[in-house]
Image (cartoon, rainbow, N blue to C red; front, side):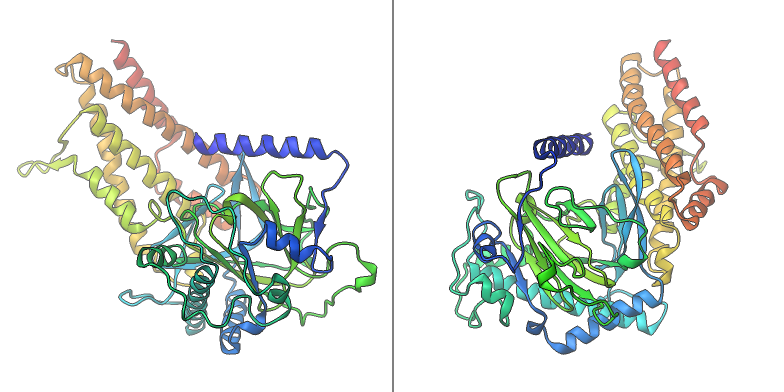
Length: 506
């Protein structure tokens, strides 16, 4: 409910903003504008840009080879995301790589990490080349973590509960230098003194646990949306805040556009605004029509950091150039509800209410208290809709890289089957007349609320699996679950709901 309310609020803000603009367009600046660096310094100071020359050449080569390897092995996929109750295929193709057992959810779609090499985990990759690609990305991840910590220390951004950072201490080196010279922080940072608590905070906000890789060839796209506020041209990714991140954590983005593909830059004399042949990152203050936007060109091997609360106070988009482009977007994802460890823990909690009679091997419930039944059935829903359906909906895409997820998902399916039995046991118990009526009615009322939500979500997923944009692989995965009776039919669930209503009316 909160998510849907948030989406409605964003849509209303967008509508009001576009109505206020009418046929006009807001101003924006590029490095060619005289006031560009002053605007950056005063309104966008928590965006840090580094040119490719600042990154070790060996790392460039490893990462860029890894990108190409993943593309050659067909590891990039367009996601079918859900926005305002409708399904859309993303123009950008993606793959998630990161800590084993981590997931990342955006636009109602949960992605599952292809695990990068991690000590203590037995990860079997489909080829040595894919192993090397994942290894290159964890090397990049470690490098960007170190760079982010140094930058935050250099800017003296210390996190406190009482303080809202609205300004950044001016640095001796100007942002003009950050675009034209090597590096954008002072070279000597070894003497920076940061309190121990702040050091821990900086580490937590820069310890990237995954990277979302993106790939798009604009010339292969039939249609790209136009940027609506500033007239910046074709967008690969629309204006947004990144979702599901640890609060005030840094996002690091490494960009690799294939500039040797025969596409050149346009002549500056012919242009007004940004060069449409070159990829850019666009930034604006969220829902603000007073502050000009920024469009910053991205060349092969450049990277940028979005520090502190920039992702909350500002929005960003990606403006398409003409050449194919990869990017690696490193995040501190909020995995409080998005790891295997978490969901297995939830399953174990739910199954504590299931007991087996040692003599008859019959299954029964330990408690029929409304709160216990409600908790178990909510976990049941979480396993089905946040994990199993999300995983199988994406088909066998992960098998392009590794089969690592198959065993834990099989275990999760087994937990789910036991919870289906528990649902049946609840229904069986509440039908018995010896139950105290008040207690029984309270249990059934809680039970019904969760079942109705389950019925609604099963209908939604049935529609989602059948939309034209769903790939054949996704549709086959949904068909697989139906054929194997993994998920009961909608009619069966409706019968259960009707039966509960009948019991309540007695």
